[in-house]
Length: 286
Ligand code: PAF
Image 1 (cartoon, protein in one colour):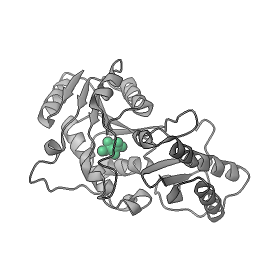
Image 2: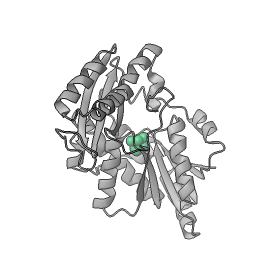
Image 3: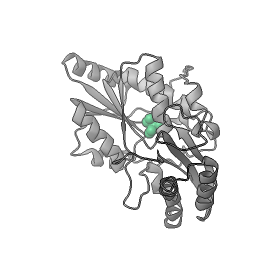
């Protein structure tokens, strides 16, 4: 497996593979791998000749009081976890290589970034779309795989590639969950046992919404009240949002139907911000 730290070297290698007729999938990550990341890599490997994994904790997508310093990092551990996976190259640049002195460009998607996470994290998505554009330019992959846990991020990236005619196929991978329902996230490592119990309020709320909708309760106002009370019944939880939105536009809805996604963001113990989502009326198998 090749490890590249420098954008020029990464680009030269990828270009050589493309000229040799190989297709490339990029899996953009911030590292501290878990089964969810491995699932993205395996999906990428099942569809493309070569998989490139980028590993970069992107400072520009964190706000001033967010968890950039606490975000878990362990490069050696990550490299061990990649052993046995079909990953041809890892791109792990430093912030200085990605944002050298004089850097002053930002790529911004407008409307779809204003809801949900965009409200409490106003600069987050510009950081994501800028770094993803850079990664696409450096690696020039044929496809890229993103997790559906970051439901809004996936919608924003689909918008980005469509609006800017970026020739990369965007593939979403369903949320990978722990046995107890907690959506896998690198941030879960920052949960102590008491907080981990509270973290289950997100998947529990999703289950509750599905049960209530299954019994014919489709009023968002009533579902929202029930879900917020449920989440706040767990110790040390603070709600960022409990939102019922259209799956494409991400606009809020007042009644749930087959297109409605419940999107959740909850702070646990003031330290860990967790997100989760899912269709409220999933078709069989979702
Ligand atoms: O989803 C993530 O891990 C990050 O937002 C991404 C896409 C790697 C950009 O930094």
